[in-house]
Image 1 (cartoon, rainbow, N blue to C red):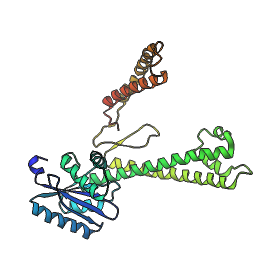
Image 2 (cartoon, rainbow, N blue to C red):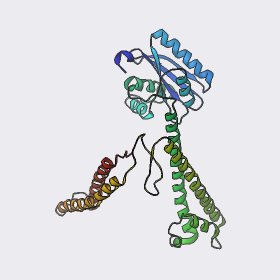
Image 3 (cartoon, one colour):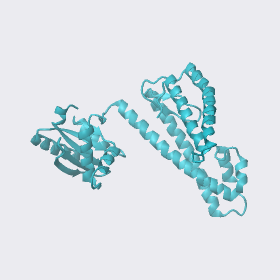
Image 4 (cartoon, rainbow, N blue to C red):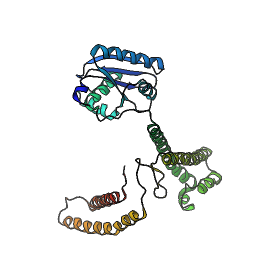
Length: 325
């Protein structure tokens, strides 16, 4: 936004919550023009628009809205504003937190948060994304929500697996590890459900069975989400066939698939990278003989391995035109 346009804009920052939203309007010079708190219904949104337009006309400014929306609680408000033809910007919470941390007294409340959103708009409005009601934006939002849901379920499954490790050890002792190659496969989980030694504590048995049932349910739920993600990304042209077991990976629109030539070239880099890794480790070990205050050999190996691996990844990324996140 050019300076002449910025000087004619009324920056309205909105701190979004589930049931109420706090809006603060600032002039281009950071002076508070108005503040109001509204509900999450259509009539509340209308009152905010009317109040904003009145204050904008008084000041001779054009309103522009910014929302700090973390959990999509401001979706109703942002959609309503866009339908009314008003520009809406998405302001990342980290930008507001960073600005608050620079103040003398970094206090936090709804009014200060809304003011912080407006202040970020004044400084960074050119870099803030516009909220759009398009099919592509809707699909991107759906992919993001499904990815977050899958992430939560995977974390829950990992937590349950750690608990089940402890429960199985208490019930079957260490021999449970040698019973199955994967103690969390379907076959293994069904075995744990029906094979409980005699004299096992009843509460311990019930805890183990609940954990097994939940892991089985999570397996189905995660698979269902992955199928939905795959279908969405195929419809949106954002699918990349991954390595086995990695699941579907979102990518930018128009990305190309990895062809066999690129894969072969990437594979040819591995022997070279391993030789370079060994040579650099030997070079790093030599000075350690006479310098006890140097880092430990394990840290040197880790650092060198990380550097070479990153170089290999960088080469592969250039060859395969991948977007690593």
